[in-house]
Image (cartoon, rainbow, N blue to C red; front, side, top):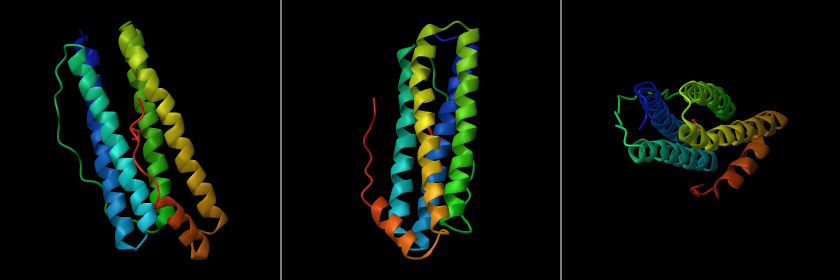
Length: 167
Ligand code: OFO
C-alpha cells in the first residue's frame, strides 16, 4: 500500500512526466518546421522516453495497490528563437524535473517507504543522464555559434537516435 501523501505525490510526478512528453513533442514539431530533421528526431525520441518514465510510475502505483489519477496537461510552448534556445529550455525543464524527483524522494524517506525509495533511485540516476546529455549538446552548439555547417553536421548525427527502453 501507498500512503495517501505518497500516492498523491507520485500522481503529480506522473502528470509532469506526461507533460514532458507533450513538451518535447512540441519542440520536435518546431524543429521539423525549421527543417532540423535530426534535432526533431532527437526530441521525438526524448518524448518517447518521457512516455516510458510516466508509464513506469503508472504501473508501479498499480503494483503497490494504489490508484492512478490522471489530470489535464498544460499547453506546451510552440515557438522558439533557435535550436540552441530549444535545448536551453529543455535543460531548464530537466533541472525542474530533477528537483521534483528529489522532493518526491524526500517524501518517500519521511514516510519511510523503502520500496518507493528503491523505485525512485532509477529516476535519480536517469536525471543525471538527462541533464548531462542536454548540457553536452548546448556546449557543442555554442562551439559552432549554433549555426552553419556545424549545425547541419550535428543535425545529421542526431537523425540516427532511436528509442531503447531502459529497465
Ligand atoms: Fe522524465 O526525465 Fe525528462 O523530464
